[in-house]
Image (cartoon, rainbow, N blue to C red; front, side, top):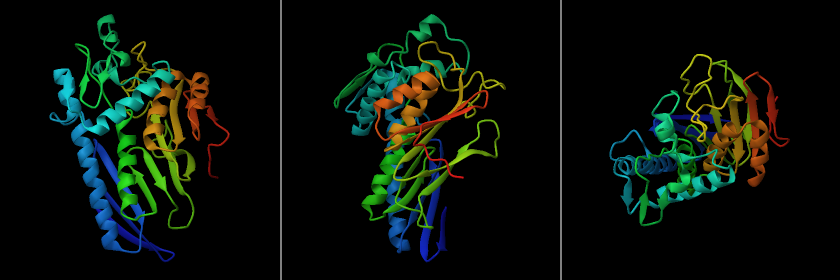
Length: 299
C-alpha cells in the first residue's frame, strides 16, 4: 500500500507491506514520487533478503535450517553480524540477553525442566564467516534483535536512494531527519495495560526506538507469564511491564530493551551505561514510571 500526502509544501510518501511476521511501514519525504517508489522497492527487497536469513516462520530460511541441522555452512554475512552483536550484549548483560532461549519459547510459558534450561547458553554458539554451529539440542531465535537489524538495513537502503528524511516502523522504529512539520519524528509508546492508549509520546532525533512489553504475547491473563524469558530461570521477569530504549541504531535499541526487561530496573539502568547515547523509559507492573534524564517525553 502506498499513500501520498502534501503537508506544508512537502510531499510525504508512505508504503506498507508484510515482513518478519509483522506489518512494516516506511514513510519518506521527497520531491519525486518515482524516486520515493524506487527507494521503497529497494528497501522492501532488502527486508525480503533478511527474512530469508532470519525468519523462523520460513522453513527454508538460514536460521530454520540451522535449528534443524545444528550447523550452517557459508552463512549470510548479516547472520554473522547479528550473532556477533548478540554475543556482545549477552556478555555485557551477564547473559540476560541470550538468543539460545528458543527451547524455552517453545514451552509457551510452561516451567522448564533442567534439561531444557541446559540448552540455553549463548557461549555454546560457534560462529564465523564460514560456519555457524550449535551444540546438540540447541536452537536460537533472533526475535529480540532481527527486527531492529531489519529497520537499520532498510534505512541504509532508503538513504542510499537520496532520502534524507524518513521513518521506518518494523516493529522497532528507525528515524532520520525531520517530519513534514520540520520537527523531529514523534512516536507514541504503547501503554502496557490500555490497548488503545499511549503511555508517553517521545521524539526521535536521529535515534531509534524499541519497546519490549509483557503485553505483546502473554501466556496468562495477569501478564505474569509472557514471551520475554530470563535465560537463567526460564521464567518471565516479574518487575517490569514495559521497557523502551532510544539508541543510535534500531538493532541496539531492540537488544537492549530485552536485556533491560530481564535485568530489571536497577540492574538494567546500570547496564545501559555500557552504551553511549542511549536512554530508557521503564514502566513497572505497579504502574510507576522511570526514565533516564535524557529520554524525551513530549507534552
